[in-house]
Amino acid sequence: GMDSSNVGGVTAGGSKGLATNQQQQQHLAPLRIVAHEGCRERIGPNVCDKFRDVALQAADFPGVDFSLMQHASDEAWDALHSAVTHDGGCYTVGEEEAATEQRALDFYRWLMSR
Image (cartoon, rainbow, N blue to C red; front, top):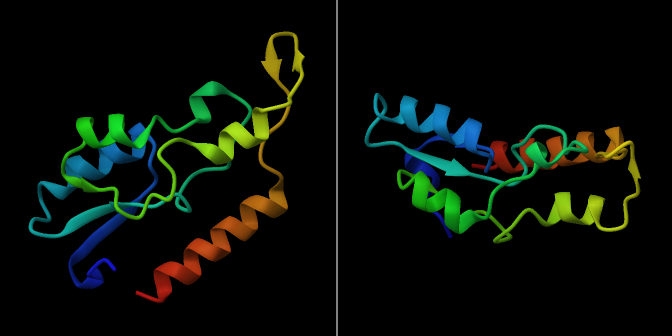
């Protein structure tokens, strides 16, 4: 497994969080920033809520450790939108509140176990 003794931060796999954390990492070296699928905002109905593929993110953010990302693409977003109907050209679904809360709790437990 990953050595958690030198982790300086955990971030979502999305571009906005990665960019912010990579900028901050410049001041924290030699600590690492780790991407984790559980650390993300609520999975919304829009395409902008979807993570880019991990390979693309890793190329754009070489200072971030992506080894904890369980999927190469955003399977959680894809699953919510696989059979969704459109209303006026927009998706009408997103992650249920209970699912968001459970994911946050699971992430918190993982984080506290480090």
